[in-house]
Length: 380
Ligand SMILES: *Cc1c(COP(=O)(O)O)cnc(C)c1O
Image 1 (cartoon, rainbow, N blue to C red):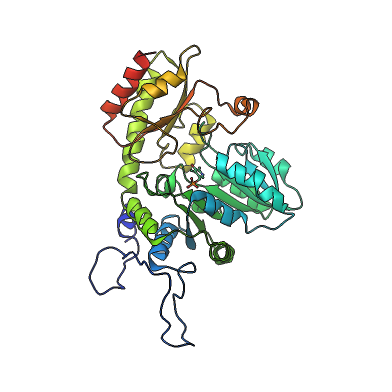
Image 2 (image 1 turned 90 degrees about the horizontal axis):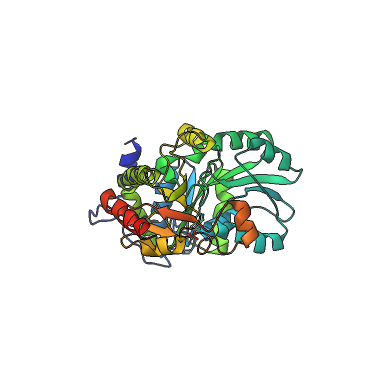
């Protein structure tokens, strides 16, 4: 069993129960029996290990070609546990367009613990190199950014990192291992908000981290177990099940996104489209070289003078909501919703205008999605 899509469905063969069940059971047990006081047991307490969670962790580690995976109660908890492997006085370089919640945990939590950070444009390896200091320990970024879909080369970034003995940490939420495997491109740690594409059905909050080697894995495991932000057995099972259909969902997300981009390109109300699948940009070039597809998120700007609020409130099938990566299409206005925490100046600097719309393209029939968008555009 070697092909990726087969691995998605079958995971690791599970033969530890007597029932013949084709799926790993949900082990709702917080503690486990010791045969004797001195017994060496595989499981003793479920924060430290739970077979359902461990199954998911191994499943994702295999998909990312990593050494070991870890499942957390949210993507944010995964990010916290990974950044907590560093110590006060360490310096990290971060992508300047990382997820808002990551920025918050860095700025309002880790800075209080004396971790230092410098935000750079990771698309430019020279900018990364210039930011390196004697106490720099890692580079942290998202290879496709939110909401403007700027693409960073994992390969080039990891090369710079290796030269300076830094760890490369990639948040792979937007692509999933179906479209990119950052560890294969030189990264050391991969993080996911499994809330998004991995689970894919907007029914669970979950996070994953995958380490490339045993040494890094040991440090993340210590944090997972000591801080205790583990994923429950039920939620582990939901993510496990979501992963089984990742390939078929993603294929549909990709083809729908492409069709919607083509539709938007033909509409006079649209000023600009942000999608790495559109040829002619650096983002497209890097994505083509390092990813197996351009993702399911399409952002675009309405022309000045058009009412962006009315537009996103006007779609009927496509629901007005934050989050992304699920079977249903979701639309939102970043400046009012996902990126509302940024000041107006920061928003402007980041390119998040009042006309910018982010669409997480679902797996519905593309004809219905396009009709819904057209209908709302026609009302403007
Ligand atoms: C949603 C998201 C997170 C945070 O994950 P939660 O599961 O919401 O805690 C981190 N990174 C990216 C890119 C995300 O989209």
